[in-house]
Image 1 (cartoon, rainbow, N blue to C red):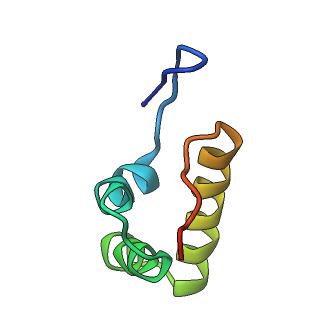
Image 2 (tube, rainbow, N blue to C red; image 1 turned 30 degrees about the horizontal axis):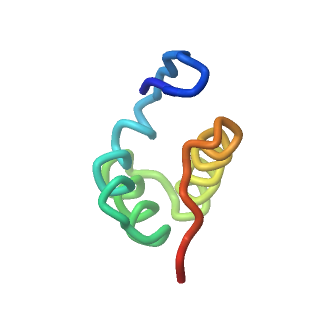
Image 3 (cartoon, rainbow, N blue to C red; image 1 turned 120 degrees about the vertical axis):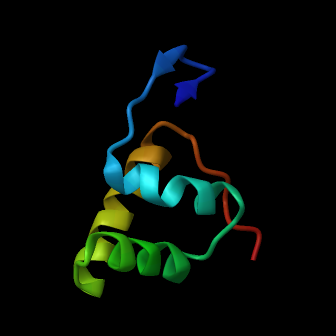
Length: 69
């Protein structure tokens, strides 16, 4: 990913690569976690932890738009 404001390229790991397509189309957190469970055969708890870590990293780079709901 390219952060256009800072001009930094950010690499995403396999977790990010798995959920990125759904994330950019507005998928809910539950759907994103389900993708991780199905793709990596991990527990729901692990999927949620990985998802939160990825979203926190995006937020730290101001790369998420707030949820309108």
